Picture 1 (cartoon, rainbow, N blue to C red):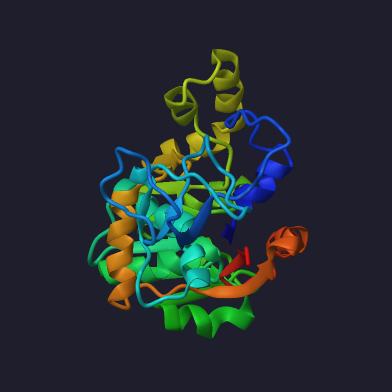
Picture 2 (cartoon, helix red, strand yellow; picture 1 turned 180 degrees about the vertical axis):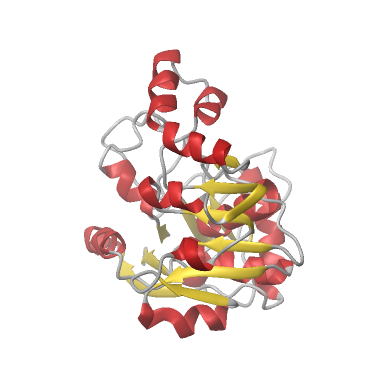
Amino acid sequence: AGVNPVDVKTRDGKLKTLLKYRFPLVLGNDLSGVVSDVGAQVRRFKKGDAVYARLDKDRIGTFAGFAVVREGAAALKPTNVTFEEAASLPLVALTAWQALVEIGKLGANQRVLIHAGSGGVGSVAIQLARHLGATVFTTVGQRNVELVKRLGADVPIDYRGARFEDVAKDCDVVLDSAGGDTLVRCFECVKPGGVVVSIGSTPSAAFARSWGLNPFIVLAISVMSRKATAAARGHNARYEYFFVRADGEQLREITRLVESGVIKPLVDKVFPLERVRDALAYSESGRATGKVVIKMA
């Protein structure tokens, strides 16, 4: 199973407004493994198939020996990667796909800024953006500059040595994973008509309404996100917050990209299940390059 920031946020109760989980709870949002059995109506998979998946948000729990996966959430595992490498991909690859392809409509000869290029989402997003033909700017620590260049970044920006908004200009799409002041500054990079897509900030009021949240919560969220909303208006750009969803069809597209060598998984460290707390702590530390994975056996 892959370890993701959403696991830490769920553990800490930071997503309780959006996700109504009841504790105690088994964490874990994505996986790879072998199908042990299938339901009577399942047609796409059979017992013994090697698969990977991002689970639906209301049925997580991949930090375990077995997990129940909806047929429409899974895809056959890429044949050219290990189970550990495959487990690192579903959530981050779907995040990159939904942000850049589905929302951002990123294409050839466009410009994109991807924050945290050596992280789980960032490392896949760089490779996907390169495949789409875009010019890729990315923020990164100095020690990982050469890494993101190998992944396909055209302009690495050392976030300690430069202000990214002074370097990345006229971008069609910005992928923000930090939120806060970083999110507001992202709008200085996007051109009129462009979009800032965030996975790390306060949700937008539109997102809150689309999830059917309580009107008082929607009002509170609209107040908390007002700086980003105002920045978007001021730069004639769009602000889109989203929460990655399970999608087996998109995952099959990602499988093809992995098998053709377009996307290569980046795994930093693999922990056994009994060290799940260490895995979460290492992921939370920000020291990981790429993904942290938990191996069940």
